[in-house]
Amino acid sequence: MKQKPTSSQRRSLLKAASLAPMAGAALATRDALAQDRKDTLVMANEFGPNMLDIQGVGANRPTYGVAWNVYDRLMTYGRKKLPDGSMMYDYAKLEPELAERWKMDADGMGVTFYLRKGARFHDGTPVTAQDVKWSYDRALAMGGFPTFQMKAGSLEDPSQFKAVDEHTFHVKFVRKDKLSMPNMAVPVASIYNSTLARKNATAADPWAAEWLKTNAAGGGAYKVASFRPGQELVLERYDDWKSGPVPKVRRIIQRDVPSAGNRRALLLRGDIDVTYSLPPKDFADFAGDKSKIKVHSLPVENALFYLGMLSSKPPFNNVKVRQAVAHALPYDKIFESAFYGRGIKMSGASNEPKAPAWPQPHGYKQDIAKAKALMAEAGVGPIETTLSYDLGSATVSEPTAILVQEALAQIGIKTNINKVPGANWRAALLKKDMPMILNRFGGWLNYPEYFFFWCYHGQDAVFNTMSYKNAALDKTITNARFAESKPLYDGMVKDMIRIANEEVPRIPLVQPMMDVAMQPGITGYTYWFHLEPDYRQLVKGPVPA
Image (cartoon, rainbow, N blue to C red; front, side, top):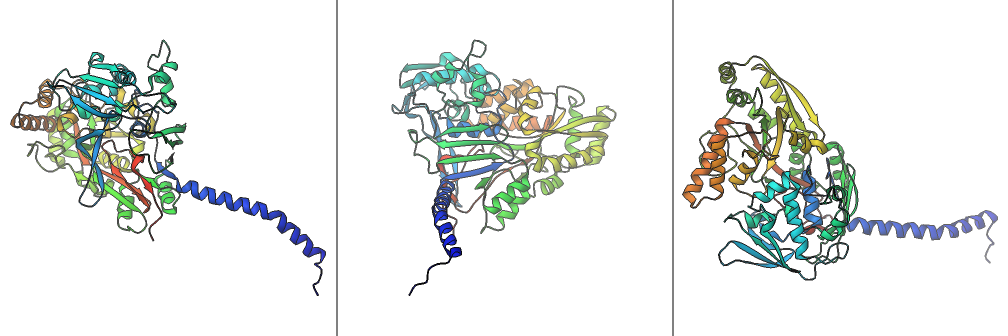
């Protein structure tokens, strides 16, 4: 015979029955969150894009990543597998992206692109050759970095670009330039939705520069779901993308986490999936414990971390002062203490280049006596100056700056250290008024003359951070770009390097590593020349057992 439940038992049963739907809802919510996390990749770096417009004046490096994922180019680069099984781009191989094919003119002085007919921008507007024409015209009209970048491939005048019909676009070459085609596959050559952009243009802003800083007008594999500068960028997969395989990851959350310690902790806890900007020591630690965190590392092609000196104004307009600084720097200490030996040291070899290759180590090494003698020859008294660096690179720049400060004090140069917020660094470079800087530059196109065109040519582009001018070097750079034979080209490249080593407006310190730390379940990572993440190939799988 069953006993009747007591009043207390009845109350417990009623409470359990009332909570059952809530428990089921909580379980469903937890399952949904787990599924959402599976489809979402979270990346955290020190700082993110300062705008969404790659052609905008002052766009920082993370903006390159926005362009790469949110916009299309006519072409992209192939990929190749390295001996260790990792993937990197292949700068010698161009492949279709927005253009399904192209055909060179019979005389080699132009190219016709045939666009994918089903391609649409994120708002559903069909992509046309008129959009390509508008985008290329815009890059030339914006000035600064985008204009110089187009010019690096002899894309100089809007008359070179013609929309033949809705899906056919022609580029006329003003000269035979081996960089013309590769230059149309870099982020600056992104294709904008001209119809949408024009709706947000004004008479004072015909290219919608203000609107495009915080709004996207692309048709790439991802669309911008939200953008909070200095905090977070959220991307959503564009399922109607036609220019390649639809990405595996549905949602990207890219967060700004200024503290390197916090980023490391988030990675170790599994709260983020990928990070790029950690101190070299952290990457060295992770590389030694492959069971927890996966590290991908490659020396950055055509790239240098350097000390630059403003050569247009005293005291660094005096070549002997610059050479004195070059002999004073503690290269070995910088390499070991700031970079933890990760990278390639750029000192202690010879100022006479051994090969037509860049980068290669120069002949300076620390010699305080020689540095003091050069200061005496320069005829300058004690110097007080400022050494500036980007807070976004503080993990290597801060210890480097302190070592530079200590070394220069020994030769009569008092150095005050100035830390510039990452979001303001590009604007600070544009002013060309910082006497000394620590900076990193990498050339997108892996050719020595391309690096020198940006960094040493008297056109004074933004990346000629030293405002260095040398007519003989300018001529050599130009001649190397269009050399008619390999022996001529090789000789010109060596001449460029020799002049740079002797004049030393910037002192190469280290060829840096591109280090990426990720959860073990992340696959598909590809190293790209712009150093920003390409989310289109990433796959987020379960953590290996």
